[in-house]
Length: 363
Image 1 (cartoon, rainbow, N blue to C red):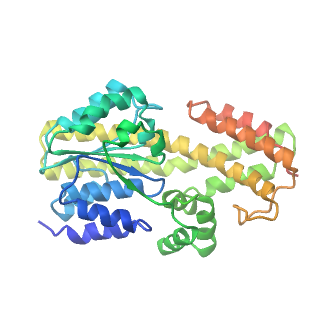
Image 2 (tube, rainbow, N blue to C red; image 1 turned 180 degrees about the vertical axis):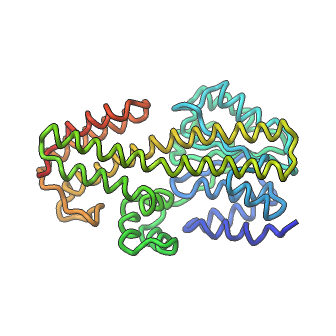
Image 3 (cartoon, rainbow, N blue to C red; image 1 turned 90 degrees about the vertical axis):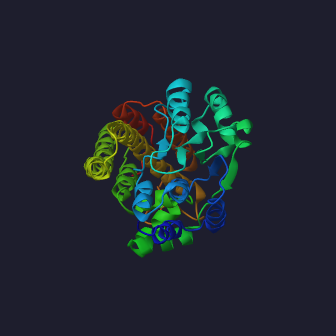
């Protein structure tokens, strides 16, 4: 076996700004409780995976697999739809997985993403398992908005709060990752304290944000300009998810190599393939929705910059739009309508067309 400590230490060290949470979880790993609630918008997934690796992995290879989401004793669950369903998501996935015995070690971890999407009926179905899970199972609920979880759910978990990161810390981290000072500063300003979002904005999603704010700045009140803008941002949205699709193909190929090397029973291997396939499908759906929401957010920041006047602007690389406050406020209402519509899995082209024709001329 290879020593797991160096890779675990590196995983914890790669989570900036969460020293209190990291210290608490490092101490708790020897005697963990049955259920945790990780609350915060920045770093939740990284913290959950690092903690899960500390709990279940006995060597460096196993730690690496947990961190990449490929360990059979760490199950990552997301809802198939807008919210968690009682049978398909809670009973058949979260509870059923918690009841199964670990495959490689003494513990099993179930990570439940977007805990706020556990509505009352689904949350109530999970209460008994949260209170009295199998002795070898640990459940980690992750959420950016813990207040939306039922009090009965929160009370059954040990809560770990993750703090929003400062712009300075995010910018420093991005520059260590290789971003230029200008791009790091811009992404940090736009990210709202979230390092994961800042990394996307400084990397693969930079062209996406640029396409949306440029399209808004080119609107002249004509239908033709709105149509051109929709075409430009749709192309940027497509490019934003192409890299993820290529990554999924590589991940699937890597899994086959790992399965052949590890010699898992056929049932275990089939289960891992199915989980990866479903996870990739969920990731792609979510990435498409997130990219669209990021575009709407980029538009909103342009109009908010107009409203703040001489105050601090979000878009450090753009001039404020030459429109009046009433027009900016109306544009923000149109963006709010579009944002709400994204949650209903709409036709992308129609949503964008409706949004762009309701935005004011900027030139």
